[in-house]
Image (cartoon, rainbow, N blue to C red; front, side, top):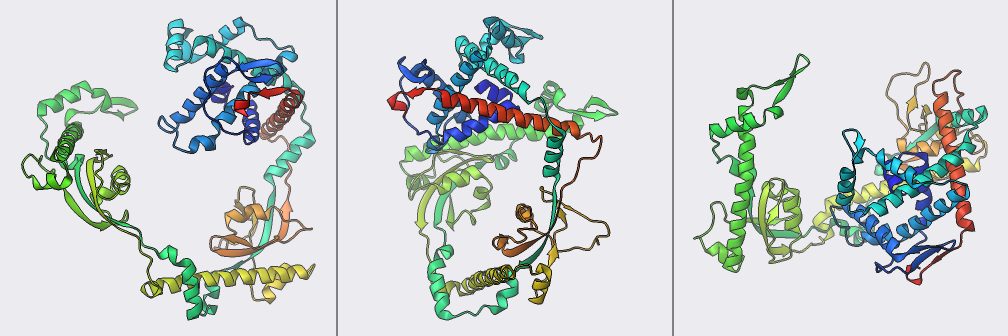
Length: 547
């Protein structure tokens, strides 16, 4: 099944399998790794799945996830991924599909498997299957032939089962096609009012007692960041490259050996660039290459010197033996936002440096720009200021927050009032209260606005895209949103104006696309129902260590 998931990720079959697996995974727990015992781990309708099979599947899935995180899964994420539950469900799912396919009379022979494998491009050489290539590819992926061929057989069987079932989804009626076309291409338009906090800012009165109480609950947001004081040395490629001289013979030699890298299109033909045209580019490349080597040598020698000196302080006192440019620079107390450019420009330096504890020496840090060594001298802990120290900013924030509360209250009050006046005209009621009413224009479900005939080109207030979904929930019977909607820092009330369900034009080229979509939908429904039926009928038992 994993092969199918990898190779046919866009197919209807896989979308169904993925969807079903995703629904089932959440019901499983997570446990520790199991030994490679051959005793039964799972029993599916009297068919045994051994612990060895379970462990192989577990290892394969673990490695698959680990590869996405550079070779190891971050601590804690393995539990969130629920690898154990996924593996258990995968093994049960594969066995049920296999049994269901056999019950339908579908059989896959060894010859079928061989022919399937021979058609896989990765196992071919000069357009033909090659056994040596086959074995090398499997060895490189850490898979045994028997394991892989069994998987191919299972996947092939599952695929044939899908083909068999899909035959029942061939018929798609005109009504179904029209219905799905209308649903996807439906348009809606709404009237809306917006309530801007800025319009209520003048109504906010700053009461000292209330401000102090508010600040007590909000003071954490004004807390300063911890500041750190470093001693550091950087060995930057650009700094070192500028001091490196490149022999002209080396430049010529590089050009001759790498001519294919210096081409350009002239009159639709690939042409090699003349040496003089690329000479300076080559010099910069060679300088950079040499600078990388020299930067590491200098950084490594310096780090060894620090270790041999016994401490950063001792190293700093010993002028002798220090490599050129290998003296510590001292920073002020800094945060990530105020770090010197040489540090701030390299993410690796920043991450490693600010992760240090007080009086801790970093390892030799390799970044995009070169190497660095950090020592954290001291830390100024975060400080929560008194209100008087941040009065201007705190008062501005207080006003802004209270203005937003007033805007929301006004919106909620108007929404409640118009709902109580059943049948009241939205636009007339709003204008009577002094609120401007805007129209969204015809919206598609993708949030796009279509201009109607005669619509002026002048700029107008637009409905925020995140409220498009809410617009499509309104109808003549339910013309108002249930609650005030928030978008950005503003508040909105929406009112139904109209909905349009377009019909597909005759002889539309989209007809075949929609028919195919409808057929795929039916296939999904049939296959989902078949799998659900298999699962409900199945007698599945688990070893107690897997429960």
